[in-house]
Amino acid sequence: MKRIFCVLAIGLFCLNLCGCLGGVIVGAAAGAAGGYAVSRDTVQAESDMPYDRIWNNVLSAVNLRGKVKQQDTKRGHIEAEVESSRVWIQLTRLTRSATRIRIAARKSYFPNLKLAEELLTKVLEPAN
Image (cartoon, rainbow, N blue to C red):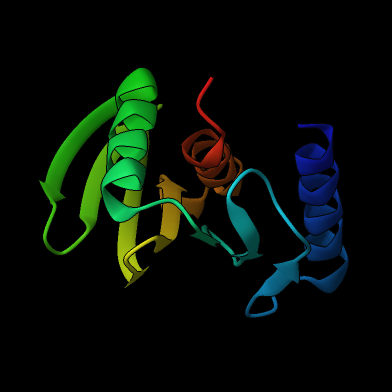
């Protein structure tokens, strides 16, 4: 867990130094993720967890902190409101056992990268 926060801190530091570049690739992340990309309001990771498990983790994470507004299991799309921010989550099946998750969060038209990262971390953390 300590490694996750170090990676996130380095990533945020790089974003502050580099300004608003398209995206920054940050090193290995938590749990089942091989790494993740960061942009202005979006985090993206690939996981070796199956699609259904990621889907359930996303719904659990969102419902703990907010409310799901729309969901489409077949298209892998979830729209939610979490802590007065709008959140868009897109899941993509890469293989039978690998899934890409992309989370974008905005609050009053401004990026809420912190919330997107927190949700991604919650979704990818190993089950206890």
